[in-house]
Image (cartoon, rainbow, N blue to C red; front, side, top):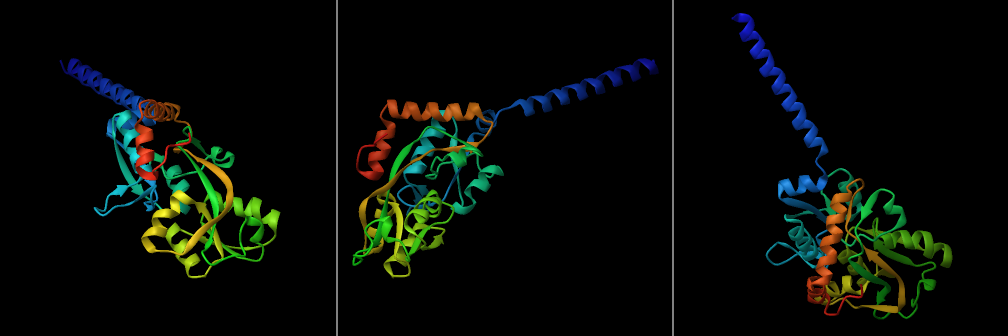
Length: 268
């Protein structure tokens, strides 16, 4: 009898081990999309300091174009968007470390970034202009940057552009980096820097709210396309994001969100 009991106990323990192994294997096989659906939330990284794209509204809630896009994408995947604010300079590191599942914060699609992360199809096109004080008549294009002090967002595609393309073309100038747009524009308004580069959609709310005496000059120096960024190796998640964006454009939801925040129809 003791042998029979021992055999039964051994069999039960082995079954439990096998079941446990099977559960672990299933967890390992679960894709990021599966994990997001199981949790019911999609963790979204954004700055929260970049109106009208993403910012804290009067109710202390994340709002803006990026926030609305994120909410709609999450809804179409079948979950809710959970926003996690992060300084831009640490956004890529935050994504790589799993602090959030996706970055929807005007991240420009570049070949360099594609090496370390995957992007959705573009969800917005931005034109970048030279911005100066209203009384500045000496800077009209990037060719006038030589010997001047130019402000730009730290770790942004615009900083890369100034260092790798503009400076070799026009000659040396000083670059001052900032963690947010409002400080950049305040320094420009107060004469601490000579110019900055940014897109008009981004600076208009800040300029209007703070009554800043700045202006855009010349033609756009470049056009950027922003995408939703995720960690590499998650094709199911990327496909779901692209499908959600495609459907939003097809049924008019994307257009409604764009017009809500920018007052004009989208160009992509």
